[in-house]
Length: 331
Image 1 (cartoon, rainbow, N blue to C red):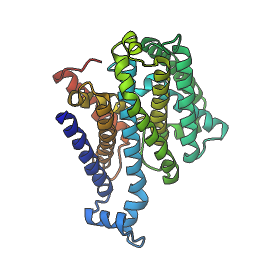
Image 2 (cartoon, rainbow, N blue to C red):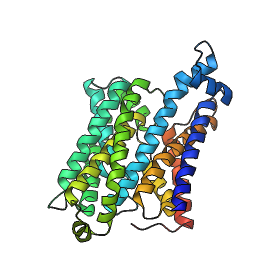
Image 3 (cartoon, rainbow, N blue to C red):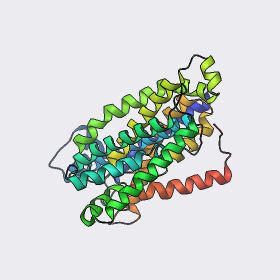
Image 4 (spheres, helix red, strand yellow):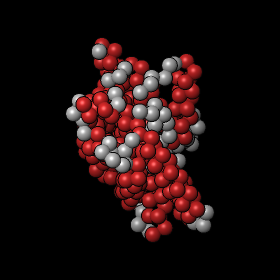
């Protein structure tokens, strides 16, 4: 219990530190005193405070939102499928969001970022529904293997359609390429603010569902004996994962390895307690994405490396080290 509390507190502190770094570090370094004044006593005539509030503020908020949402979604997905290598993309969410953005560009519906956010969100949701309808059968509401197979099949189909369209759409390819690489830049604050209550509610529902997922991890028969409604629980968790991953992908584009690596890194400290893992992931995921974003700002100054590239690079290294030196916790 003490270890779980300590790792959760450590992740919360790491998130606060990452937020401070995100506000302070960039092409122009700003001292923390100016950052504090920009947040508490904003002076729009001060150019440094304007950078903090107008440019880095929304960027930092998206990083916290997307990172926390993806990490929590990954923890829930791994528990739901009893697959330690599962991630939100297993439901085809990234593929669905990407296809929706391309179709939105083709039809002219998603020419601006604001429209792309909601088009991607809807595309992710519809894809997850399709995966569940194919993978769910019987009173259990979809065995883990069926859900995984359905997700892989749907994601492969949609991805092939996406790239087939892009082969003949040069102008749309340029816009899509910027979105699909994953970035926190150029996002509008109003659209992201609208996603905050959605993500917060989804995380809370995921926390409330965690105990039932722990029962399902014991096996379907044991869970039913404990009074768990298998179909309802699995459907609810899939909805939560879809909302979290869909919102994150819509806001920042596909961020690789966040939903896979962060739960793995934290599980040895939280043990079998899914509620503690979800809580730690909510903090740790946001901290991880912000740190990757800050690294992307400084390693190629004055240019920047997109955060999607950095999460894949850093997450891949961390995951490889963990696979080499640590025992993977079985689910």
